[in-house]
Length: 520
Image: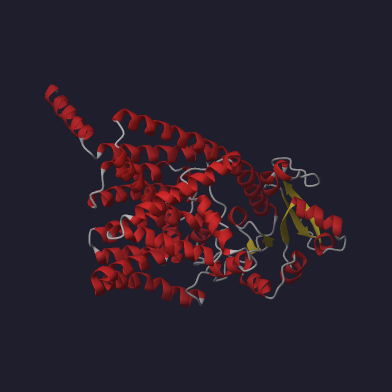
């Protein structure tokens, strides 16, 4: 027994003295904080439930649809949807748990692939620790990795394909890039970047990445063309018409929105200016590091991708959802970590100062992360669990199974109601997109066209309609049948400026039912 204990102690000692121990400890810490985030916030994105409903429809035999019988390509992530459907086939499983397990496995897998890639490129241990620490301890990535969306799977496939590229496994690089497109086709610029980098360095060998990418993604393109009549996700078209096309803000303002988001932690509103300063500092260090790696093609793919992705987001004015920034954010954090590691090597601080600085940084990350967790938890408690989910359950319990519901927040309500949904953005309702293209944006016109059985509306919008137009179709043909107001929001006195209860407003909904049906 004593000899076995002695061997175990020697093995533990070797691990502790090896260069691999500190980054492994950071990865373990990253997993722990993500688990704590789940326990504390229980947060799941609203849009995640759109994908969840697609997965359930597949398992129930209705096909790759949102509303039964309506073949609309209303999710941008077919691979994630199919993985969730596979999870649901297992007896006793639940879709939220499946999404979280995939997210956690993907996020930790990303950190391991990053570590292997950086070690392969012979970066210093300090640089590796900075990169793993920034990505593992960023509260902005905690919420993305645990929120039920496909984002962590996207980043995992990017990290895995980069690892394959650095190790000169070009065919595998292409296969992983093809799977990336199965997960989110708008990440096309990542394989394009890898192909360009490889072509500039080794000529035609870029085709060794391009062909596998195309061949892996081609089956989905063919299926989507035959099944949906288009390989382009309808959500892209719907969001363009609903959000992007009416937004004529200057490109510079969209760029500023993106740049201000590029810091590793959530800063509270009171520290907004400090958050902006930190964001510009992050960009500055990343640019400085980029200027020193222009001859290293394995690293150059990162700034090249960031530049192309930022241009795409800004020109398309796709800054309404911060989750679109995550792939570029991930690449920027890698450059930031490498840059900080290089700067500290030049400064050569003492070991004690280095440990002290690391401890202070960890405390700052945790304090700001906890503040962010409080805000995210409130959103889950009040808006999601207090309003949207109960509204969906009310519809399932009190409406006819064939009832048609018009609404804007499609996720939770559509999933829990299990009714035909007419969404006002048009993600799964092509007719809504056609109306917007014809310049029709008014609620009464939508109601007149679709003739829904139920309408979900914000409390203050309802008050505004009743006050301004007594002949509005909402008040003449429908009656309020249910309301959900978990924060006791007063739509008549919502407050102004900093006193305005935005969460209260976004958590206050009413359901109106058609009068002549006598179903409400």
